[in-house]
Image (cartoon, rainbow, N blue to C red; front, side, top):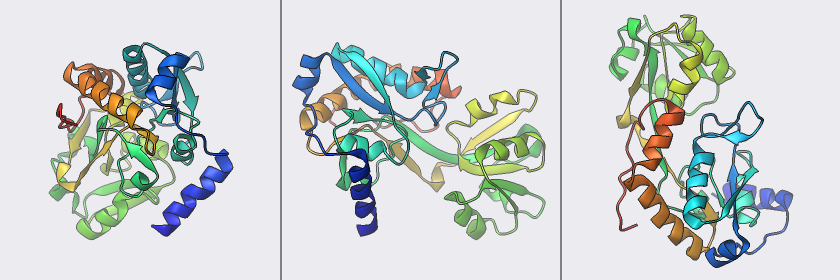
Length: 266
């Protein structure tokens, strides 16, 4: 935990001096809300053909800005500087697959969940694989990316499977499409989008909620309650009227694997 906090402190030094977060009233008075998104996490966010930041999270940010009645300014962030940017007041809130973690919550505040993050099996219809039990076989080759969190689970729970380790997700996807592996067990939310470049294969994506589901919210500067409380109400309304699910299916090409259990009492 100390190492985590020291890492955030070092990142804040690199980002610059900490500024007081803008309150809700200050954002309204300025007429612009600044939102951090990571365009390297398609389809959460990406650069479109016009070299503009687009995707699920920018669309949600636009819906939030519309509710606020202000202009939207998208600010590019990377995975390492997402939290430092919002902690230093350089953005009003940050997106970018912000999983709600206790360690992170020591440094920033979270809203209620925007979406779930799900693990499961990616395979093809022809494989005959239906669940986790089918993976623990010497006849099955699992392809994974080196260093990812699912590998220890696979080695402990599926020791009979053959394990093919590659360097990145693009190579993982290609190995599945070429039939060099039978399946992969990993995050599945973006898989329908990623695999759409291989339309000749009949893909099957099997959620495995028993392995665990996490939730991502919006990150705001610690103690900025006026903004966080308003965002909680806005997210509730965007869940309730179907906007978030509609945008999710637009970009992820499938329904959210685990629906967010929202309540008006946030």
